[in-house]
Image 1 (cartoon, rainbow, N blue to C red):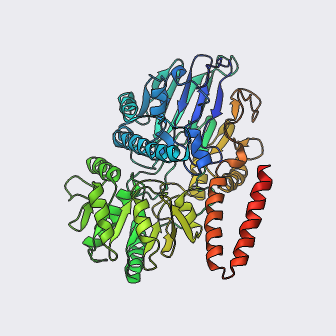
Image 2: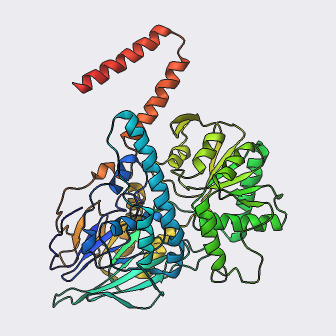
Image 3: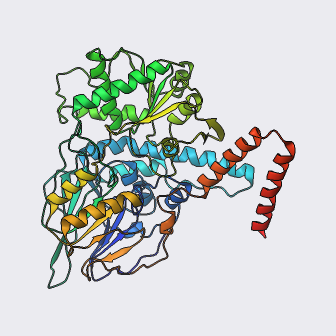
Length: 541
């Protein structure tokens, strides 16, 4: 853990995550009176990036007065139990929907984490490497949930010493918000600062959510840029369902199963709802559908409880269940799905294929040329989903190399994020912004594409800033000035949001084996291996 740093007299903002990457969202604010966070998310993607979850935090959890939480996704909330484990005892302010989802999401994340550490330690023991301790436990997750204080949208609340906050509907998932903050500065010329953290902004045509909202007339705007370089055609709910029906029909014509890696919250429920309507309208036949994710099953129960709030009505049949839709919470039920080699739709987590039951389904189906994998969400760099999306011919799953002969397809109709035009319109609606706009939560190409658009919108006098990981800005200083960096960067910017050497090693290993197996000359194999040995020996000297 870091040691307590002296609070700056001028308010400052540090970007402790979601800078150059779409994961690890975490913003550290300090005033002369207090320090607090907006979000505290888990890093996902390459092994190099995920190692940040285990390393020293740039702040001392025990010194934080409170946390403001935009929504329940793990890349925004997943490290909260680590804060609690290391001494954070303050309130976590979030909406009721976010709290309800975290009741399931955080314990599930803790269980997965403990299981992954146990598996890693077995490998480390065989390799003679030191054991790794879990960064948080199920008990930490449960304590975290107890510290959540629910808030209503569009109502100012006092959250700390001369700090107040107001939550706005972000239209992303159940309970998601943007968070407006007003804080005293101690400066006579600028007595208070108003800033808005976007969280994740949903598209205008989201199935279960209202259009994103927010205030105007701000000092600073901190906006996500996940799809800052991607534009999608506008689609109605009927058009989206038609597209899904075509994908299902295409997969069934191929003769195998259709695997859909899906995020447990919102994406799963949208797909289930649309499948139910397609079955009811007899657009597609009632083939077996398996929701194979204990977390997604529990999240679906939360959505059912909030169905009237989402405009689905309270007198309708369960919007997410039909006789041919099977929820499979147990491991035995999950393994039983592998006996079906055709005609089934399997929805399983995780959405980026990084954990959960989708991995064993991919292991059983990727090598089957008749099968189809449909990607329906963002795939961060370095994830298995990203490798499949980019055309990998062989991947490594649970220590085994698996040939990719299944057809890999993707649709953007179910994304939870606004595209470049949606983000542009949302930012435009927040103007005027007096001091600066920060663009975060996006990979390099997306951030800079959105930056070009916003610079044309805002004009030459308003700084549009792209922070790097661990940058700290003086909020009262000259616009766009980095205040200081109290410690070295935890990760060089060139390593954030990109494939790392672990990915390169896996790719090299697969390519080497493929090359050796296709060689017919034993002497050629020996020459290739000898050149590799010499290169390794030379690098080791």
